[in-house]
Image (cartoon, rainbow, N blue to C red; front, side, top):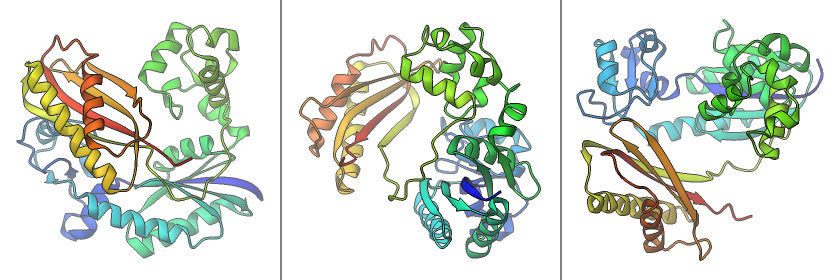
Length: 347
C-alpha cells in the first residue's frame, strides 16, 4: 500500500467534545452547544450537538428551541470560541509531530499527505496520539486524493476504529449509486441543476458528457463536477499556515424588521464590527457581501468588490455593505442579516 496518500482528519462533535472534556460529569449525556446556551432565547441555533443529542434528532443549524423540544433533558451550553481555538491548536500541534505534510482546513479538520508506507497504520497512530495528547477523538479518511479522503472520513465516523479508505478502485462501487448531494462541495442548488439534467446519482454524473453539463454550468464548474464524480481530486497538501479567506458576522432578530432605515443601520453596525475585527487581525478587505433572510426563511446574498482595492478603512467597508444592501428589494420582513468580508490573501 506504499505510495503517495492523503489523509483527512475530522474531529468528532468538536465543540461538544471540548465542553465534555472541561465538564467530565457531562460524559454520556446529550450536550447541545449554541448561542448563549439559553434554549428559550428566540432564534438562536445549534452549533454542535453531541452524539447522544443527535440520537434525539438534534443537529447543527437547528433552532435551539426546537432542540429543547426534541431533547428536553439535554445540557445546553454557550459557544466558547477561545476554548475551541485553543483545543484545535493542541490537536494541530500533535499532528505536526508526524513526518507528513499538514494542511489545516479549519478548527476541526486537516489534511495530511506524503509518501506513506502504511496509511491505515499511520491513521491509527494519529488517532491514538490525538486522544492521548488532547482527550479528543477523530475520524480519519484515507484516499489517493483530497476528495477521496474527505468522503472516506464521513464513512470513518461509522466504523468502530474510526478509519475508512476510498481509492480509485473502490470509488464507484461505494459512491456510484449514491445521490450527487453526497459529493464534497455539491450543495442543494447544484443538486437541483443536476436534477434538471436528469443526473441524480454519482455514477450518472460521472458518465455525463461535458456538453450536457455545460447546459447548466460554466465550463470550469462542469469540469470540476465531472472530475469530482469520478473520484478525482487535488493531491497537493499545502503546508502554509491556514489563513481564513473570509470572515462574517450575522444576527437573528427577536422580532422581524420591516423598516429599511432600521435594516440599513443594523447592516452598517455589523459591517463596522466585522471590519474592526478584521483590521485588528492585520487583514485587508477586498469584497463585501450581505445576506438577508426573510421571515419565511427565504435567503438571498449579494456582494460587490471594493472599487478602490483592498482596504482597512472601516468606513469604506460599512459604506460598501450599505451599497450592497441597496440591491435587495426588501419586500418581506427580515429575520436575519449578515455581512461577509472577503480578505486579501497577500498573493
